[in-house]
Image: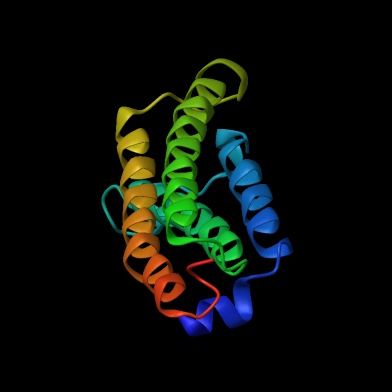
Length: 139
């Protein structure tokens, strides 16, 4: 986890990732490749897991680099998980009603939740533990 903190703790990484997620999820359906291009069934679900996992993890790494108390870190990590879930559900409704050739899919929401949950778990196990063991973590 030192690698993530060393290279990805700056604020522009989570902001850039958030912008990438927004852009990819609001592209018209005509601009997206078909699943037959990748030869992997439900490939878009894996993409959703990666997008929302990265979203939660990068925001947690950024906030975790501030050396807050473990209790504050865990609270922030959970809030980021909830934000990601709400963001994922919201983007599905935006796709349904406002984006041409994009559709609402419960499977995408499940992928979003899985990615956010995995990143939340990684953040809880690694980032909060390093804050506890560091000298500034308990202040």
